[in-house]
Amino acid sequence: MRGWATWLLVTLGLAVVVHVAAVRLLPYGIMWVVMRRGAEVAGWNAPLHPPLATSAARAIVRPSPDLAYTSCMFDVRAAPLLVSAPVGNGYASVSMFADNTDNFFALNDRQAEGASIDVVVAGPHTPPFDAGGRRVVRSPSDRGIVLVRRVVENPEHFVAVDQLRRRARCEPLPPPAGPMRAAPTG
Amino acid sequence: MRVALRWGASLLVALGLGLGSARWMLRHGIAEALVRNGAWQTSRETGSPDAGMYIRAQVAVAGLLALNPSEAMYYRAASDDAGHPLTGDCDFVVEGRDPATRWWSLTAYAADNFLIPNSAERYSFSRTTVARETDGGFRIVVSARPHAGNWLPVAPGEPFDLTLRLYNPEPALTADLAGTPLPRITRTGCS
Image (cartoon, rainbow over all chains, first blue to last red; front, side, top):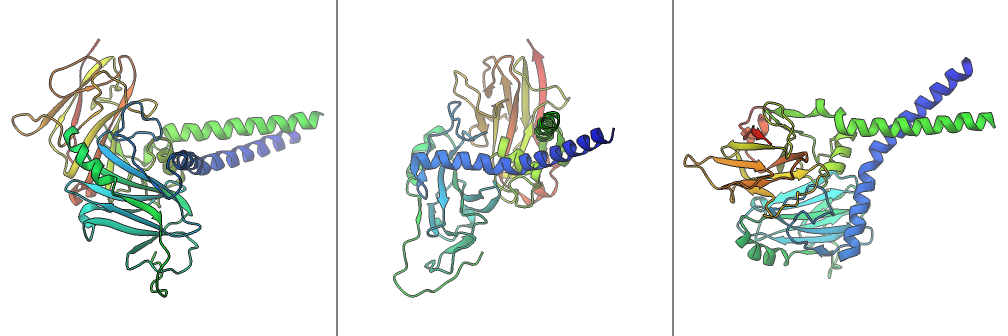
């Protein structure tokens, strides 16, 4: 009798561990699959401009068919990442997602300080660097996804939106020409 | 041998219980954490670093790369206002006025969380594509059968759900997620 009680307690304890581990690790697993697939197409730290979502789109669940996306799978272990997305008249935003799905940064066209949203992404362990006066965001993880969303107000609007999104940059920050001037602000 | 069998069985049972209960929680267990507004449901934690582990896992499964509530709100409905499940066996009407937000869209998704194939290649309506009623409101028919006007196609006989995306919602909306006026969903008939 005591043997079965021990068996039951151990089994239930293991079940709790499996339950918590599965729920906690699932976001990391799904993000890793999506990042790896995106990097296979465009590489790490490079923009990708998929077509408007249709029923054939199977890369990411619940895509919006009204948005022109630009995605960028980032890895900032070697160098910070420069993100620049020109904005037009309609809604546009730059958002960033950590490797556990958390949306740690979002900025839209109305919040942009100029004609584009310019951000430098630093990793959790990136040492101080020269960001050239740009806004610096510290990612909680070395890898993640930058996503630029642009509203396509109607089908005729897509050509102009597509031209605009293809001017987006997502690339390692070029080394500074002069001495160090700034540090990440978080 | 008996000891190995006993603890091997323990591991198998633990895996089954742990994974099965995790799956159940992601499907049904987060309902209490959601805000309800008529047939619509939403969460303030979507995309947020403050999200609990169940909401975060749910976002990964059925809402990856969702924006945090300061930028966008996502309402989802799997039934009409009377509680009837959304299915392609029936016709539904979504009607109302523009929500208090800069831009919105209404999209239908299949049970696999992807867009629904249809010959019209129509997957959504938005603030800028929906045809208006004379009073400025809108009326969208969600049906597997073609309809004149704003027709959002779904698959016959298949369950589906609707997502209402609200970009740059006004402060009044985010302050009252359960009470802000949202489109009504009404079943109008079944085949």
